[in-house]
Image (cartoon, rainbow, N blue to C red; front, side, top):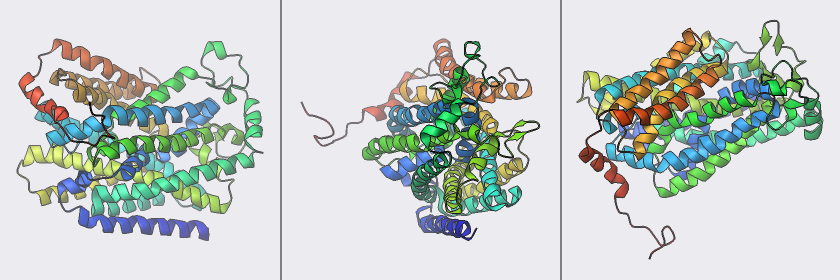
Length: 512
């Protein structure tokens, strides 16, 4: 216990110290929200990766989908790496940085407002972002609190309050730069920690080969939903697992979803230069392979711990207890490492969420509606106030979460990415995307998510979220074909940012 407490105290001290160190770099709105658009390659890459993966993945998703799909759940992690990280950087990174600087947009709703010349799109986008980031934040609190309960036997509610206060302090004080610097340190801890944990858990099961052998003996009748696999044996240790179609839905939601999440895309706004784009692409992909691939690979062995108390209950499977139960068998030193690991993952995500929410509410709702000429200092104070408001709302929801962690994230990601992904991506590439198509995407993403909560059309919130994203990708170009086109003169001016000549060395671009 002493070891675990010392490790946490040191970790907390470093986090708060970086918050106050970054205070001098957060004197105005641009610095507070974007770090002055001067964030270097490694910090950009780690900020993206650590914001992507939190206790939601490590505790909620790895536990639930590792239990359901066995080792095939590793595909989710690989999808996160190559679709959610690599392709996201290649498709969105450079263009997002260029376009948002041209439009002087600091948030995703502000991008929609200026790119499509619509104050209403900006205001409604800010409301969508604020409302649907709350359940995601609650899910992060929920996952981390369960791990704390296992490691320290501390009351769930106390854990949530401590996390909320710590997050609030360093985000309020240091803004984006404090978040990014902490992300870098937290990312290194995550890389070391996940490797140590996987090795130790497998060693406790007699090694990798023996663990696979034992996993292959577990019957799969209860989870097989594909008729052709009904009589299959050893599916939990197989390449595609017992339920490949639903597994595909999870891959789509958790991988493609990052393309439309405000707190993820926001990382591209702050990139410093071309080197940061190239290095960030490689580093964030490697980070995702290790962290996401490692988490889901570890979760795939969850059924080997099915005889431990707390997982199989009278009402069914307590998915959120699977990974904490696996970790409870580790030595105290490694449990301390795990606690810091998951705390690192979660705090980085929480800080991104609260910063995104507060800046969106201030810049895209309060300022346009109440005062267009609001002073920079007033905007800064409002953002810091809304950091506290957002944290309080998510804590209230986390105190009494309505469902499993994975379902909370499914609702949040489904609504946000369903509403934002398609118009954001198409808007970076095409001058022909119309204002009406953005409204259509808003309506489908949010409307379908709410209807599906009240009266389930697609039973799984995960598959429902994946469906809204795909629907948006189809609806936006179709609606743009049949609705009034934007003024091409204005669009030519907006897109001129991509054609601005720049001078580079021969090693960057071969001459004639």
